[in-house]
Length: 256
Image 1 (cartoon, rainbow, N blue to C red):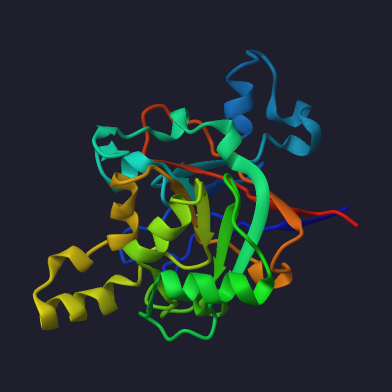
Image 2: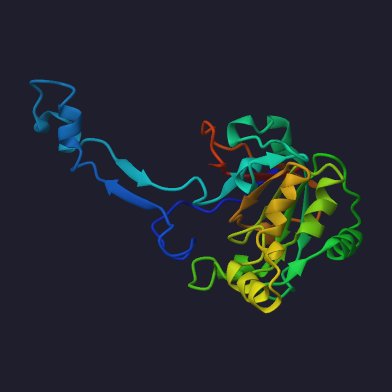
C-alpha cells in the first residue's frame, strides 16, 4: 500500500491566496516560551529546564479557506438540494469523505477555461471509468505547477455549473481541485461578465450546490502522482462548529 499526501501546508506566503487573505503564523521558539512554562511551576528557575528551553508553539490567524481545505455546501449558498438548509462543515457526513478516487487530467486547458459536461464525458471515457455514487473526483489543472508563484490564484481551468451538475447527478458528493477555486479564477470570470453582462457566470460551479448539495477541496497537491483510477481518497475535515469549511489533509491510498 502507498499513501500520497494531497495537501498543501499552511504557511506564511502571499501567493496561495488573494492579497490580504493569507494566513499569518507567528512561530515562538523554545527560548521565547521558557517563561510560559515557568508560569505553571512557581519556584522553578529557567536554568532547571532542559537547556533552559520551554516549548515550541505557533500562534495562527487564518480563514477556514486557507491551505488545503474542504468546503461545505453552506459556503456556496444558504440553501442546497432545491431549498433545504445548507449543511455546515461539522455536518458533512463522514461517509462522503472516504471513497473511490477518480482523477481527471485537465492540465491542457488554458487558464480561465470553464470545463463542461462534455469535457467530463471525454475524460472519463479516456480513463475508462463510469462514475458511481460517493466517488471522489479530483481535477488536476495547470494551477498545480504555479503553486507558490505570483500567478497561482489566476491559474488553472475551472469547473462550471454544467460540469458540476454532471457529477452530482451521478451521486458524487466530494470533489477537489489543485487550483485556488473550483470555479475558474475570478480575473477571467470578471472579464467574461463585463463582456456579456451575464452575472450568472459568477461562481457558477459553487452555486450548483443549490441544486444538489456537495463539497469540494481546494489547493490540492501531488495529483500528477495519481493514476486516473484505482485508488481511494480519505479527506476528513477539521470539525469547526457551524463553519463553511474545514482544513483537511487528504490522502490517496494506492493498494498494490
